[in-house]
Image (cartoon, rainbow, N blue to C red; front, side, top):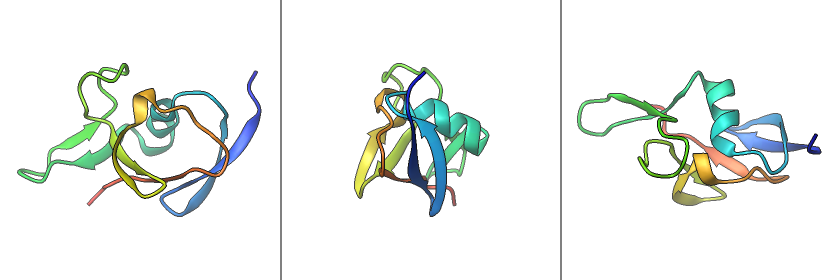
Length: 84
């Protein structure tokens, strides 16, 4: 089992296992919807789970367009979803 760390997820503290994929945590915490498309507002989330589809894009530590499914969780990271 990995060590539990705390990250900031949309302004709230969440405990998670270090080294696990961020996408898995977001799927659990946010009911799979990570953002909505600009064109028609369609929901997007974790789809392929291996970095191919780019549907799980989030902002991590101020950096836009980070694929959550291939990003390991680390202590203190700040994650922002675009959930309009």
